[in-house]
Amino acid sequence: MPPESVTFAPVDFERQTVMDGLAAAGFRFDRPAFFAWLGVTMYLQCETVMGMLQAIASLPPASGIVFDYGIDPSLLGVVERLVFEEFARRVASIGEPWTAFFEPPLLAADLRALGFDAIEDLGPTEINERYFRDRADGLKVGTLARLMKAEKAVF
Image (cartoon, rainbow, N blue to C red; front, side):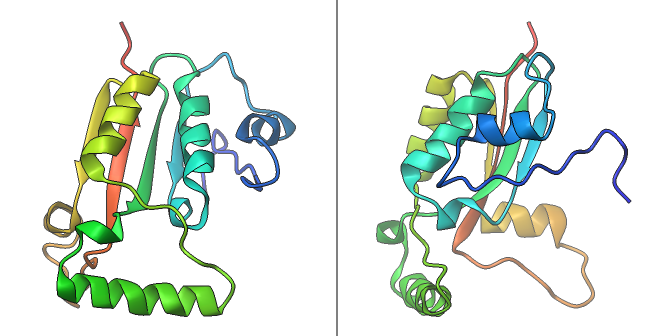
């Protein structure tokens, strides 16, 4: 059970602004907030993703976000590209095409330009080492996505 301080706010990112969706859920824009935005960005337009990040960057210091994102397919090796194409075909066939992809250094630079100070970008090796190292079942993340955390420092 989530703590009482956690609020889930449904937002259709392609049809409404995140600020409108948050306001409808009673969000307090004058207080810092941290967002967990996982399993979403790859299904949106890049402009929509950046709009969400910009909205969070406009919040008070100590606000932040953690999100996963798809790496630009042009940066993948041959085997990774084949895996990507198969996954992309599967999700597109059920009406959920992947549409947003990023280059890690450029995304980090964009986050800094928006006003985030502390940025941590984890690739599959770092994610597996940090979160999956001692799993008995051998579960690991694949090579297609990354995990980004961006926070605004308190000065």
